[in-house]
Image (cartoon, rainbow, N blue to C red; front, side):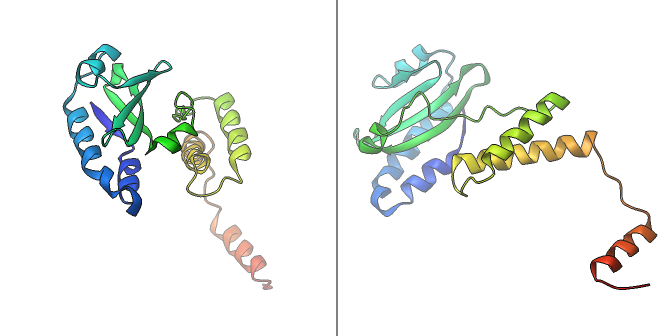
Length: 173
């Protein structure tokens, strides 16, 4: 399986209070990386205590059942997306079926472009380090790419550029 969002694991075990999670999470990572899962039954063969939440979420008990790891699995792409790792207490505060996977796609039409701009406006005040801010950054990258291809703005003629710069500096001819 291909595993993404590794930073989630590293940041978790990098915390002083969760250093004991590093080796069990590394073991989980190494095992899953070698796995081939086409169905939930494939997961159950190797991870009998895994729980399934919703259509694509799997919850693993890690570190002697001290920690919970929630992933989204896209069987057809052989992809595991790490969505959450935490203590049982923190896990109880989330809805494992709702831990968001970014459902962002490339922008191919004016309608999609407009929808992306509305979503960016909605996310504008998102705080750095949050899932909303991450979503804002990804959407902005996609919008910028679409606009470069479909709405290019070419450089001005040199005289117009000089006049603009002089105007900005409050200079006369």
